[in-house]
Image 1 (cartoon, rainbow, N blue to C red):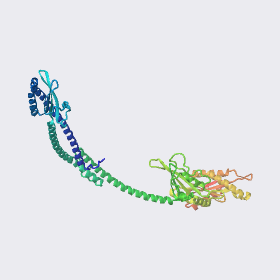
Image 2 (image 1 turned 90 degrees about the vertical axis):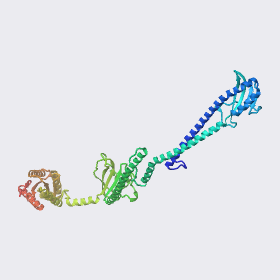
Image 3 (image 1 turned 30 degrees about the vertical axis):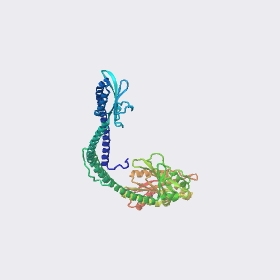
Image 4 (image 1 turned 90 degrees about the horizontal axis):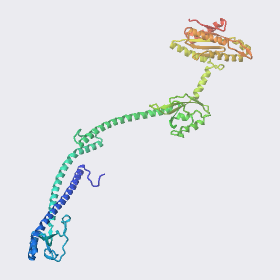
Length: 545
């Protein structure tokens, strides 16, 4: 904390602090010197007192023993003038006043002083003392006298003045030395201060020593290294900021493009975080589930979406129900049929962070009503309404596709052309209803004999066809034999009566027996007639051309 009025300059503060310390020390030294001087002067006073008492005793004991009062008065007068005594008062051994000099005889005498407690600065400037006058060990009287202490104050003041003058000289010399040392010490600090100001102003090219032997030089060197480091860091941060700005602008553009893409998608999208809060949904999702724009569901629990689904579903079970199990699981689409006759599919995926931690789940909704209707119409155009098998149109499309695939892979296609034996007689005898029932049963038996990669169709009336890709001749004949036997052994009953039926089967191979789909169909039809001519209820395989 800076004191009010205290200078801000470190040099001045160091100088003033040094001056204050020196002044305090000088004051202590002067005070101690004054005490020692006073003590020495008092000791001199004691010595003088001890010297004066025997002299006075020697001068007065003989006249006092002879009762020579005139001589005594003369001795007191001379002693007062020569020895700096302020007064002398003599009493005999009975306490009778004998003589007095320098003090009225009727004035009371002060008590004697002790040297250790004497105050030289008191007003009377006198040391009061008492000494015994004796001769040969016999007390003759008592002498009261006062010694002047004026020289004590004079000497003390002189000695203190000399000490102060010496201290002032030392103080001035010390001040000059300390000022020089302060300038020398703070020179590097001044450079360091200027460098710090430049650094705060953004100038990192500071001029400071790179090495030194004292702490300030080491601090300056460390500051210079710090400035160099900061300069490198600032330059790196500037480059990083510019790079981040470019990344931010690029991310902003990407986000805008992504938002436009998501808004344009025909698929409804909803993202829910791990706390079950809706983070994002696009406009298509709102259109599918008839959610008004003002609903503002982002930031709300996913349960807020349930009422909108409940209005359109007979039962909301399965709507936005996360699959149980692994976070890596991808659930197959769930299909909802809405009350307004729309068909909507639901697919969900977990959203994972770079560390593999799940951060939420994304839900995809697609209105497939039109696609399903289109598929049903296409299916109806290519399916036989009685048996449910592909009709002649569906057969021709598949035959075209399979021949192209065979050309590309250099494979082969076998066409089984099947005609039921005796079917016309059944229609004539039992009617067309019986014929339709037998056709349905025969179609079911054909489906039981062929495999998944083989294609079965009803060409019309009692004619059927099977397309088989890439089989050897042994496998072809085995399949033909199985189909013929299955139809022949198939139990057929109508109105309680057994009806016998069989089939004739002709086989032609592409490209061995034909170069085009139409030619293949014609060659297979020809092979079927050869099987009928050979006795019916059998198959015939055309040999390679």
